[in-house]
Image 1 (cartoon, helix red, strand yellow):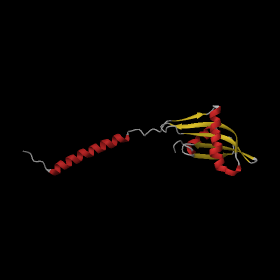
Image 2 (cartoon, rainbow, N blue to C red):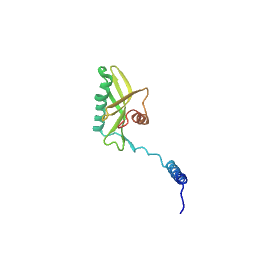
Image 3 (tube, rainbow, N blue to C red):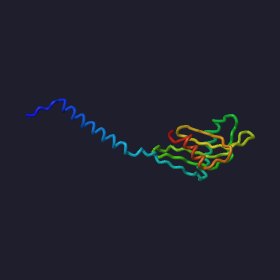
Image 4 (cartoon, rainbow, N blue to C red):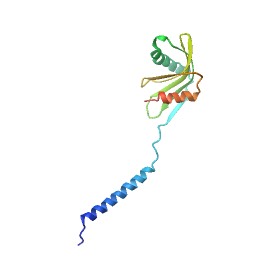
Length: 145
């Protein structure tokens, strides 16, 4: 009958466990990084939708932001919807607009995420590009964030 020394058994098990951990570690390094959630940016051109978005910018954003100054949106261009998949019905909207405050008209980029109650505005010294509006909504008003 063979006698097994506990020390030898311990070393054998320790070596087996060490090899399993090393193998698992090697495999985990080759896993791809988690992919970001799919997102989409759409140009809003439907008149009723544009009217609703601009009304929200006016009442939920500007009037709260500037209060008694009586700001008024004169016109908007590059009105976009931004959606990140997996967040349900939550989406954000952004636009480049001309806003009149008293006798002064300024250009701004605005965005909001009504579901979260987020509104952001940034003055613009020149007419921003569509990409400027996209970058702004992604940074300042991400859906669900």
